[in-house]
Length: 317
Image (cartoon, rainbow, N blue to C red; front, side):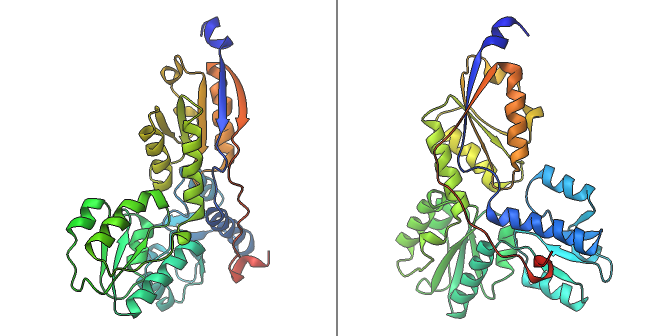
């Protein structure tokens, strides 16, 4: 590394808010408390949250992540992930009398309740979300009746339903108001009688983190998003940075940083998806020091003080 590189100053502006949301904090806390109270192994259906580092850390402490309940031994404590599960999974656990702790994010559970309420009114449900995402699969499996998955405006414009006058929409929580606005407008244009939840029901954490990237984009030349490749909200943060005209990279940690990204770059925006721990953000700041002198500033953003109650099984620790 030559002297010019070591003397360059890189201004790093940290997004606010960034990283863990209340639902993720609660889910991780549930697994940690279960390990403390009941001892390892604690079985977790699917990744507790979509972050490789979090999953690996919990695995090292005795959490066992499984794809299906038939991988869980008889009588073993089982945790449902923050993304929620289908009713058939809940029933399968009950049939085996598995002791279960439900770490479903309360905002996801609220979407489940809304979907069931609309279905109870005799409406078909349009779910705005990403095919194959754990939350989407769990939500579809929580609702009796017909659920149509819509991913794009084009999907909405070509959707065929049984009764256009008896429709309702719900959304995946890791989509923001901006993500869903166009799709909802297309649905309303096509099906004027469709009903849906108020925009205030959109996940606060998703919306706040996306707004912070918009603010960053006005101040920086490049945006780094700390998060795992299978994290929907982390991918969307990177996409927004790119849509706003900046090089934008999704990285698991500091080891993914590439020297060529920083040639001619002196201002970097740094954020993290809702399932990425702050320790990884701080690690990236340390990693950036190999490319120059780092000066860190904090973006003035939306403060978050949301806390969700823990399940009774682990609340008393």
